[in-house]
Length: 439
Image (cartoon, rainbow, N blue to C red):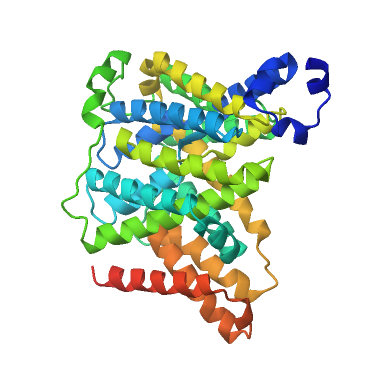
């Protein structure tokens, strides 16, 4: 059995069951290494996610545990149910929508934002376990799917630059450059250059290494964030207070309904586009898609923004991992990380900012899939990409792009290329815009 499995191709390996992999030492070793590599590629989320949620007023110490536990559960569901080599963690971009759009822009409390997450992930799950998955997958233009990821990426770049103090609100302009006399800015530039070099050189765990080295340099030169309290493992005894931290009193208000609709759209389309783009075996798409939706519901109960498939899972694919053993291994690594959380609070925002900037920049690569020769195809996508960071609202960017798509297509004589689902979503997003104007 072992020799036979060792000779299998990557495609054949992807079709193996978990038991088959366990019986073959070489394939098992590859899957485990893939899981460890995938974990270190995304491990920065243990620091970045709590810091972003802290801007929404959440307890940074408890969101560390929420991030870890939701990642562990998500990876186990992905591994055992979908047998898919995808790491699940709270999503970059989705956490930005949670904090900067829903809480800071729309005025929801973080408890209401968690309730929005619950409602949205339940809606996501209903779609994932129904025929709507096939309908949406075939009915939404690829250009808009790519634009959503790219627009969120540019939004993350903006957030990262702000956290690095590289940009700030200008007196005579929208934005201006920060002061180079600021030690935090200089540390962030050092971290950005270092992390870029590590990434270009394809160093395993590049983001994680970049954060660690930048943090050490910050400690040596006494550059740190003010008012930071250290998280200890014993703090998990208070974590139960963060469970089911919902607020349903404003569920019928316009902001809540708008936020729920927008987050559902983000979760469905980003997950659909991302999984279709990174999965080595598309036969596992539906179960992978469903696993993400299930874990999203659990993550809101645990007290964090929704979980998603991590694009960094590709780091494990590159080593040859093709089955759920990779996901299970990553989940075990997340579980072990709880014993090292006391070191997380030593990390300054200047060490996190480079990772956010580079992550956002990588998401912009989706623009290459858009046909720039067809104005009617790329202009609606352009609206999504630019308006998300400029308005500070992912929902506003999505609304303008989806509303513009059928309009531009009609006047360009391409009415036959517009599907029924395009018209429906365009109408829903138009209602979203009208409701926004009424706030």
